[in-house]
Length: 329
Image (cartoon, rainbow, N blue to C red):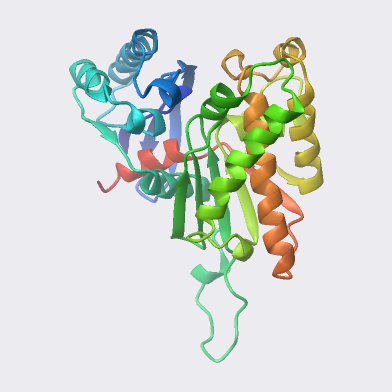
């Protein structure tokens, strides 16, 4: 087995996965951890990383470097996404990471972020019928089209495909970006929520020219906003990734959960047993993004005669995709 380490540095959190590659396309977790460092704090407004955000994030990188050394990671890949793409002073961050970890920071485009998320999410799903050998004289049913939605702090990726990505688009809407841009009251006012919906709808208008939402036969949501909304819908008494990952909930239940989280005052959100402290101030904006995306997909699917009734959540995402890439890259 080969032991690898994947680090995903987003707008809100930085995450580490140390895992063993089994040689057959599988991963065995050794360490999976997350810290909310809010690297992208203020980037939507200023276009720069703040010193405080850099200090918090680099402190986490040092801790991750120690874990990689302690657990004998043979290969390390560090990817950075939306906030680092947007920050004019990103070299200050990337140079510091290289000095700490000894590996380059890959500031990946949104389309690659989407493809890696798709690869990671697919590890938790059964192989579709398109992989099976079929009799050429028969007419097999078309393979399922999975729409993976990676809802992050600075961007949201849409990627659709069967067993491989077929189309992808990255929207500059994320829970941190839109909370900073639109929310000033607690709980958010209806005009503030409407402004978020408007931003997401405008981004979807552009995205749908590339990603045909009407073709989706299954929607899979990944990343912390989606898993937290799922925990709420499941009524969990603590954050339980085993219960969350692979859960399949009625669309109506997910939309109710989104609405409930947008209407809660901060004190109620803080008291939820599955709520990470670093998500308290951005979960409302994330919930509006998720609800708006799901409603658009549902409308497109219904118009195509393919009603969307269920929503799947996966704890496996870009982090798993990055780790798997180390098997061949």
